[in-house]
Image (cartoon, rainbow, N blue to C red; front, side, top):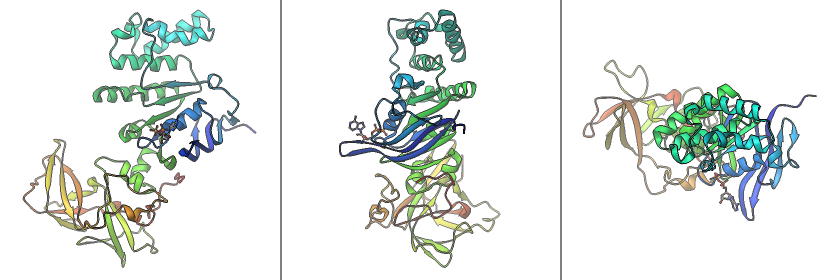
Amino acid sequence: MTAVRGVELRGVGKSYGETVAVADVDLRIEDGEFLVLVGPSGCGKSTLLRLIAGLEPATTGSVLLDGHDLAEVPPEDRDMAMVFQDYALYPHMTVARNLGFGLKLRGMDRRERDRRVEEAARMLGLDDLLDRRPSDLSGGQRQRVALGRAAVRQPRAFLMDEPLSNLDASLRTSMRAELTRLHERLGVTTVYVTHDQVEAMTLGTRVAVLRDGLLQQLATPLALYERPANLFVAGFVGSPRMNLAAAKVADGTVRLGDWTLPLDGAYGRDLPEDVIVGIRPSDLHLVPDGGADGRPTISVSPAVVEELGSERQVVFPVAARPLDLDGDVAAPGADADARLLADDHRSYFVAALPARAPVTADRDLTLAVDVDWLYLFDASDGRSLRGASSTTLS
Ligand code: ADP
């Protein structure tokens, strides 16, 4: 039997004393895939990456590469190249020597070394910088050298831990594009850690969302956005974030504050009475002159209109219990209800309207609700009540 190629985690867990950094993660990273591990600070993503690299032993479970258990394989023999946010280039060496030094240490002959360095330099646009020292480079150029140093090794996998987080916003955007291009060119299996959901969505072939050491959902970026498995993923993915508030289900409708919205066929009949409703800001629309095309409408009183140029965001109150959006929204197993702000019966929702939409903060407004994209979550455990993505693992 031929082994499945790629990296596989089987029931991997890691504890530091009482702290559970990673809990029982099952995950298969396909050969050639760009998999992103994302989640808030402290969710265990760096620990997971270190376990794959072999920098620390797992407390439970095993890490496999191409079907082989790596437990006895030290990091230097795993053929995985790590890239961190601090590039740790050798300051006294030129770019060319920085790129080739690791290969030299491994005893590679000079001709092959030069060939690989040239190839990486060309791919990463470093040709003209080969004679410079790191101190003469910009932050973006240094990060490209760090990437090049990993690429020349032609490893089985790249393991990247927040490699772009020291760069300013515009540079991050262009480096994201370079990383995608590099991955398309080299096709090397990549595991990429970030806390930034935009980075995760734009880079990942698939994205694994972690929280408190637990895998919440593993899916393509679009599936995460369209079919979040639970409240946590729903609130984490998407900007502006999904509007969420407590509601009641009755007679095939959902009562959200003063509004009654019909439920579409995606929801079965066995719904709990207490739910959390989610509506993405982009699924609220201005009603055109011709009417709402049969879509249900809500009448709202804007509190604020935020001008973003490319769109206008209307913030309006909803007479429903809000979720504690400053803290984390609930994950499976957590007591979601406790996170509702019990005494407050006013939430704020956001509608993302087109540029120059004719709205002002002093005038009431009618919005059509795209009920096909209404989300319902069980108020008791935060699970999606809509069929979640089939690749959900939690
Ligand atoms: P992330 O990368 O998602 O920010 P980490 O993997 O760094 O999270 O950490 C996950 C949890 O494990 C945190 O609670 C962190 O404090 C703890 N942790 C990580 N490394 C150690 C360590 N060497 N010793 C003790 N606790 C650690």
